[in-house]
Image 1: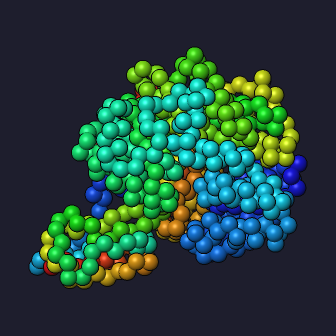
Image 2: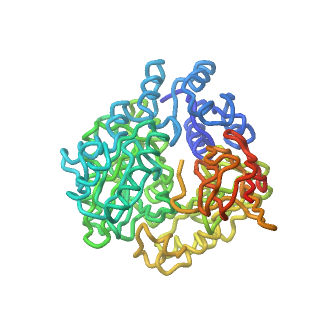
Image 3: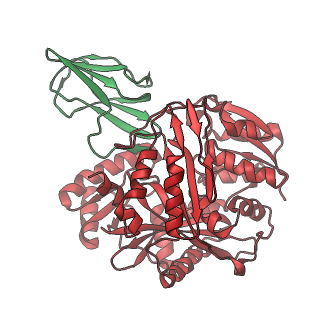
Length: 446
Length: 88
């Protein structure tokens, strides 16, 4: 097993990785920016190294600072968490070049999946279903109009190098396409340094369903079940559940097989997530993208399978077998994750500030992965995720009932939070019925 | 970073005798200053783009007039309630 690791991240995911590392007897080093010195994860690591000012570019995204901390503390490995440098093939290669173990997939797999156009084409060739779309970067408005004509409106405009919903928009006609294309290209250039745009057929009533995969040391790729991530605002997830109420056993078998095939196609190793769009009407599913790292919502898969996914990441990176027998994996019961964000529950606008009270719920089936505690300042420099409230029950009804009670028992004072939104979601007929799609939040706010 | 798709106004307005003060609604970094002092602005024009928690938040003019004061520069940090601009 790996003897020591540096966690190149912050907040709840740093804390999450530290917890498993300590359980496995791995010495763990945290890194932190000036804004994060008082966060719980810094104290919970065996050692913590300051790596620079609050701005991510000068700390968590600074490859030299992170590698410098790894050298100074003599660690054997780096775990990147999610976000920041986790999907940088250059960083992964730099870690490996420095003689350290990279807790993630091979840099080539990150690269192949990092460009959405490349990933789409690769998946199509491998026989994984993809939505009708453009196979080459769309260079100008004229090609966009021609492309949309072939695909048929409405179309989705996406940044090829993008993520997190940035630059994405659905357009219904040529006028909207002209505006949307320019906006997407400007944003793609600004945020990703790459103006490449792709167009895809837009599915109006769709669920967003993803599959957790694990690429094992013996090169087998396991699919560990799906997560429904259709509850979104601004194309970003707010709540997830597993199993998906929109997926039948027969459909699940096909989606899991397609996800494993996607992983095999890029010789994937470690934990990854294959995202699909599921047409709620026809039940056709299409490859969207692959996230080549641990996913924010991984805990709900852990709750139903009993598998510690971060432990498997460590084992696979060390060239060891996974800790469970692949043939014996069963998903039991139902799990829900609610992302607790520092944002107002009506308009979802950011709300940084000092946390003056923090009381987490507890009880059977309740797990809270939190990045903060009372006395911490939530700053404007990072994403608004305060905690993930995860709940497990024997059935979906029991999981939702426990989630309602847990939301009511979660008390945060200081920044505004979206906990009142979660209470509203859990009380809504659409969500509780299970028959919802990616527009559910828009309808709740209409 | 995510941009709000529609007119999400981060400014709080206080208006007296044809003078509109635009104030910050949250702690944020000033990402981009779009307008300049002396500009004629129309209702809905973007004055400044703030950035907070990986989100781009455009601050829009909610009345037309002359931008007589622009109280922030790119790179500034604004606190909740800080003055961003004055339109007369």
